[in-house]
Length: 465
Image (cartoon, rainbow, N blue to C red; front, side, top):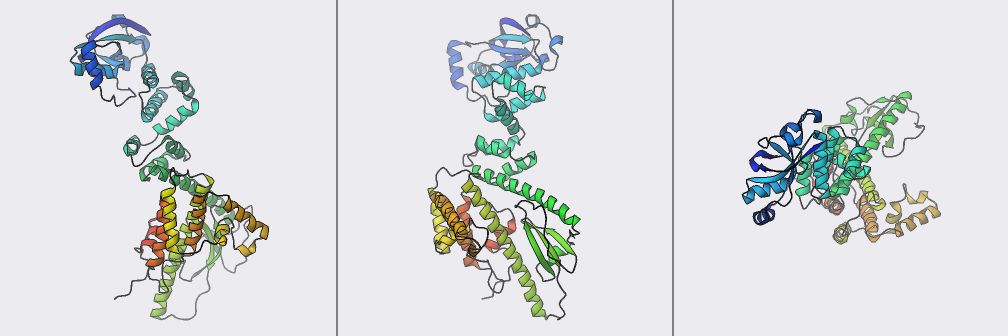
C-alpha cells in the first residue's frame, strides 16, 4: 500500500467513490462558507479510478500517478462537495495506491463510523459490501470495532428491501426502531420479513405480525407431524368437496386438534363406522367422517334454511377462530412477547369504552376463565384460587385486557336467528378490536373483518323495509 505526498488535484478530476457507504452527504452550506474563508484545512484521500478493479500488485506506485488522471475519493466526500460550492478549482489530496477494492470499502466504512456519520441502513449496506468482497463476519467485526452480534444484526438489515426500509424510516408516524428490525430476525424466511415490513402499519404492528408468523410456523410444523401420525392410523386427506359441504350436515366432526398445542405422542380417535379424514383449517386439524344420509326429501324452503344454517355455522367458526387468536394475542402482551406501550392511558380509555359498550359485568369468573382452559366447575378450588391470584398479579392494563377478552366472548355471533347481520353485536366486537389495534392487533383474513362489518356474503339478505 503506497501513499503520495500532499498534492493539489483539480476538482474536475475527483469523483465520489461508487462504493461509498454514506449515500447522503447532507447539507454542506456551512462547510462551504468555512472553506471560502479558510480553504480546505484537511486533505482528501483519493485513489486512481483504475484501482477500483485492478489488483494491488497491478497498480502503479502512488507517487508515479499523473495528476491529470481521474480519481475516486476515499475520504472527504463532504469536503469535495463543499469545495465545489465554495468555487475552488483544486483541493489538497493524498493519493493512495496498491489498495484493493475491499480495502477501499473498509477504509471508507471505518472513517464514517468513527465520525458517526452513517445511518444504521448505511452501516448495514457497508457491512454487506465488505461481506460480498470476501470479508467474514469476524473480520468485519475486527476491522470496524463492532461486536460480532452487531455485525450480524446489521447484515440482517442489509437483507431487507432497502427501498421499503427507507420508506418506513422516513415515516415519522411509523416510529421504526432497531428493536423492530431485530424482531424481524426471528423469521427465517427473508421474503416473509419483507412482506411483514411492507404490510405493517406501525412499529407495534411489526412485532404483532412477527409473533403471528411464529405461531403460524409452529402450526404448520405441528400439522405436518399430525398428518404423518394420522396417515399411519389410516386417516386420509378429506376430499375436495368437504370444503363446500362442511356445514351442510353431510359431514360429522369427530375431533378437532388445536395446531398451537404440542403434538401428542398418541392420537386417540373414537371408533367410527366409516372412513375418517383430516382437514386442515387455519386454527386446527379436523378429523371428520361422512354423516348418515337423510332419507327425507327437503322442501325448497327447508333447503334454503339448511343452506343459511351452513353459512351461519361458517360465520361462527370464523368468529371462534378470531377469539382464539385474540386470546393468544393478549397472552403475548401479558407475557411481554409483545412490548408494552409507552403510554397506556389512551389504550385504557379505548378498553373502557369497549367494556361499557358491551355492558357485561366484571365478574371473577371472567378473570379466572382466561387462565383456565375449560369450564370452571371442572377445576378444583385450589386451581380456581391459583387462577384468581394470577389475575390479581397483573398490571391494571393487563387486567383490563383480560376482562375485555372475556366480555367479548359473551357477545355471541354477529347474526340473528335468520342468519341476518346483527349490527349491534358486531359493533361491540369491533369496539373491542379497535382497542386491541393500539397494541398491534390486525385481522389475519379479510373474512374476519367482513363478518364484523356486515359485508360478508355469508349473511342472509336484510329484510326489505
